[in-house]
Length: 460
Ligand SMILES: Nc1nc2c(ncn2[C@@H]2O[C@H](COP(=O)(O)OP(=O)(O)OP(=O)(O)O)[C@@H](O)[C@H]2O)c(=O)[nH]1
Ligand SMILES: [Mg+2]
Image (cartoon, rainbow, N blue to C red; front, top):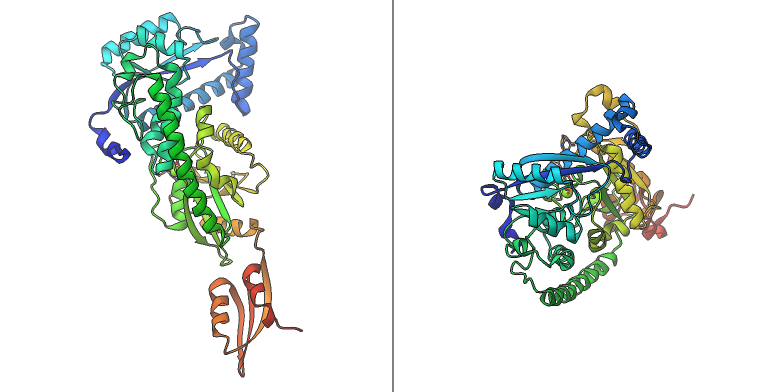
């Protein structure tokens, strides 16, 4: 059971990891704002043979560092999310990756020295490794080597809560392992034994390619049947249509916290990244009394491995059928703009760019007052401190077009107590006046409700 590998169980015997962050100055990376310009400038000067640090102007150089530092901090947080204790972090900057070992020979020796002096159990690379790079590195280094995709898969494995989530992770892990089987004795013999080797379902994976292929087929079948059940459940739900509003955003932006604040529901929230792997749905009533289903989704992350984008599409199904998206952003993050670009890229891949989006600038409690007042481009809220929630609910009300709010005057016989009760429950009654055996009511609420009683409309 995946539950047996809960975070409490890990704490005491955390693996010690050496982190290796790499930055390839000649490599094209999609970045935004100043950091993007700075990087381009650096790349151009590298090509033209100038010393790039000297060529980049002072503020631009600082923008590069800021950006790199933030992504380094994110990498360390990812490592901790996987249960690792960071023994040391090394940085390598070079124009392009070494085809055989990603990092250069000198850096490799340095890594070896750090492993020896810290007694580390594994090396984590903040970059993807080709099958042959992985093989070469494992041959040269005295401990396990994990790349970025494997690390993220591992975190997903630890946080998968539903059967579907667990199956998806296992499938992605199996597909990742297949081309990397040859010569990976060190890692394969330890499956289930540590970071990069955990799977939500199966811990006794065989090294044999044929068996992995059989397992892949099996997982795919199970996945299909789980999905069939989910589709049926959704159809049942859709029989009573309630619009879905989905929270989307970069990992750690505060979606689950905001989701809880908005619904007061007990969905897991945690400082660990990817605390939410499976979509969570809760019903919520807006100020207009209209009901929505609020959906919490898995966080997006920079350079999400492509295998994951595909296998986690199903997890993002609620996003695809949502009426409105709430894009939750961490206003306190230095990477705010880059994160936004990454989220929009994934939304583009999901083909949902035409949906109305409410930009939510979260964690404003962390900003000094004067910075808070200069925030633009979204609604300032704090899910943690429950600030700005009324404004957010009102904005959702405003943006919801499916079942527009209308105002209707009714004239009801007092004997229609059930209708009056339905109006009171589902709409805002602006006027309610008893006259003889009649009730005069002015109601503002969802058209779907008010139109149901149009036979009692007051004709004037
Ligand atoms: N100060 C502050 N911290 C917040 C706020 N909202 C969330 N956090 C913290 O940010 C961390 C991440 O919050 P989550 O709600 O788990 O973030 P998430 O977007 O659901 O993350 P994933 O599910 O991993 O994508 C937690 O430690 C929260 O306590 C906020 O408004 N202010
Ligand atoms: Mg979450």
